[in-house]
Length: 173
Image (cartoon, rainbow, N blue to C red; front, side):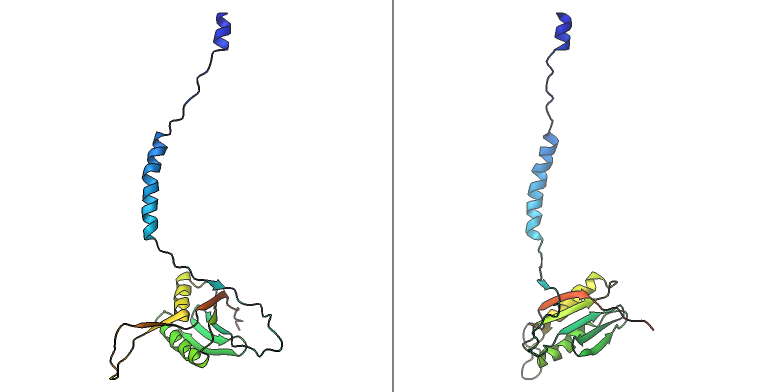
């Protein structure tokens, strides 16, 4: 009988010690909630370039393209070709020149809202963000009657509806 009791002895179930895990959660959850308030996300809606499915009867619409190359920015019209090139200055892209040229384009096409940004694969992400900012809007200082700055700078939109894609590969000769 004694051997029977040894073989069929009740085994006690082990309790899980989750005290350390609970302490971690007590600290981690409030910390994450507090930091979530301070993080601010800026979300821009991007469109993919159209595949070219247009009505045959409609006249071709101006399709503005900004191509970011390793050594320059190119502004062009998809149907009409290259409009201008802005080479790098002192190793930096000419964002101010890009904005100024796009302001002239906007003056010619005031109802145009969309633009396509095409990038070469080696272009850094930061450059994409700065080009998008230059294409989307600009800041201008209002002037009074004497030509002196008056008030706070005003932000105005250029081409807020941005599509992004890969730049066409250049043929090296």
